[in-house]
Image (tube, rainbow over all chains, first blue to last red; front, side):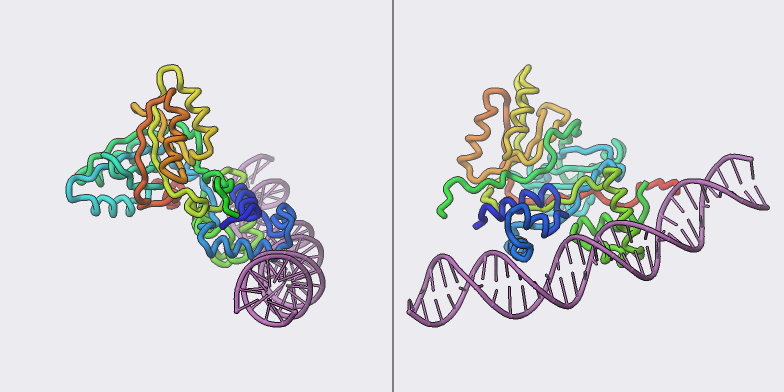
Length: 152
Length: 152
DNA sequence: CTGAAATGCTGGATGATCTTGACCGAAGTC
DNA sequence: GACTTCGGTCAAGATCATCCAGCATTTCAG
C-alpha cells in the first residue's frame, strides 16, 4: 500500500513538515508535481493524519506532567470518559484492558493544580497518579520500514 | 512571555501547520513579515519544538498499541532504559515516580510481535502490559490560554 | 522634559515556490 | 493489438515568502 518513496517522504516530513515540495522532490528523485500528488493521496488515505506543530508545554507554563490511571466507579464509565475529554489539561487518554480503565497524560502548571483537577473526577473514579520525572522517549512514530512479508 | 497573538498563531498551526504566512497574517491581523518574525522567535525560544506530520500507525500496519509499565530489576535501570530507547516500536516513554519506573507506549503489528518485543526486556525488568482498546483523547497540546495571573 | 535607541510593525519589490494543464510511457484488460 | 488507467514530466502562470526601507511607539538616560 505504501511504497519506498512514500515512506521516504513520510520520514522527511516527520523530521520537518515544512520541507518544500521542491526539496522533497530532489531528495526522493521525483518532480514536485509528483510529490504533491503523492502527499495529497497520503492525506486522502489518512496515512498522514495532520500537519501540526509540536509545542513545548514548559513554554506555556506547564512545568509538570503526570500519568494518571483512572478506574471509574461502577456505572460511572461514560460520565468519567466525558469528563476526561472535557478537561483540556488531559493531553492524551487511552482506554485499556485490565483493572485500570483509562491511562491519561495530564499537564499541570503546578502541584496545586494537579489536586484541583483530579478532584473533579475523584468522586466518580479511583485514580492513581505518577509524576513524570523525565521523558526518555518523546512522542515518535512507529518504524516506517516496510511490513515484513511484502507481497509486491 | 507569549502574547495573545502568539497564542492565536500557535492555535492555528496546531490545527494545520501548513497554513501560509499570508493566511496566518490575515487571521491575526498582522502583515506577513510580522508573522514570519514571530514564528522565527517562537522557534528560537523553543516554544515551537518542531513542525511535523502525524502519521496513522494503522496505515503502517501497526494494528495494536499497548501501554507497558516497566519496573527494572535492581541494578538494571540504565540497561533497561537504553534498551527501551533502542526499540523503535516504543513510541513514547516516561520515567515516573512510584513503583513502576517507566510507562511506555508500544506499537505492534500483531499480538505475536508484542510477545517478541517484551521478551527482549523480560529478563531485566518486570513488565505489566495493557492493550489499548480505544483512544478517547489523541495527543493534543495543553490549553494555550494565558497563565492565570498575567502581570501584563 | 527631551532626545536617542530599540522594538515591532507596514508596504512594496523581488525571487522562490506551488499549481495547473497538456502530454507521455508503461502496464493491465478486453 | 487497441484502449484505459495510472503515475510521471515539463513549462507557464499564479501564489507566496523574504528582503528592505521607512515609520510609530516605547523606554530610558541625561
